[in-house]
Image (cartoon, rainbow over all chains, first blue to last red; front, side):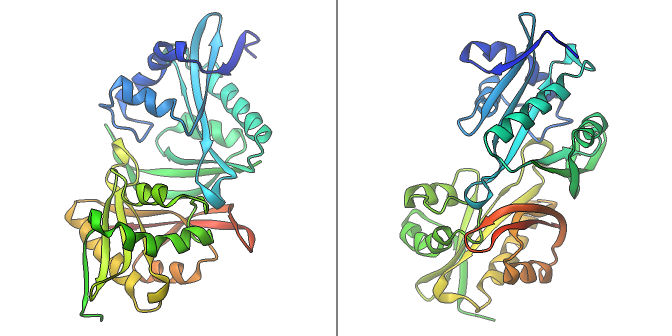
Length: 164
Length: 164
């Protein structure tokens, strides 16, 4: 499966490439609870924030995906991590999200996290939900009407969780 | 019920009083997923952060409780708010949290929030859970072992939700 793919830490020089991956999904506003009008600077500041480790998935010389991992809570909640993943709109359906998720699970174990939590999986994002279920996550919560989808109106969001 | 209580917006001059309310619970580390070693400055920066509206509950001249309200997510999740409440350890059992919660629900409706969500209610915090159930919240999720309690070890955390 995609032997030519490399997943590595993001660097400052990746900023333009990361924006090319994350801005389409942010502007669409259908999968992440982020302001669709977020500026590029604010989007980068979020995706590369000090609380996060950020990675890029690269094929040949091209960045085709990116993800971050961070503690989901502080204090007594710090052993549970949270991740966000985005794949380039030009590279969908090639298993990149799956590879990034596997990488993040391995990385989380190395970092001695004990679990991974997704706080807000939009219930209409079928592809993502099927993938997370396949990757071992359970649905542990349902937030009724918690997301206003740009075309579908108010839809539920799911909380998904995996003990490591 | 406590006719002498006033709930009002927090002001800069309340900083010392707010610290007296919030630091004991932060240091104990049994109810909030915040670093127990948080400095007073960092605790205030959190509690009075730009993303929040913060209130104090006052009896006579004394601040006996404080709470914040903020959007729980950005973008399509911005119609759901999140609150945090703390009562002075010298004023427990007098219904102050209940009054603050009622105030926050009223305030949330005024602000046209459509729901209120608590992301991380520690499952051993029986008093809080009973209160939130009484105030109309439902348990919509359970995060297995997501909180390391200082004396009880790994315990679950609950996600609680109320449509407004």
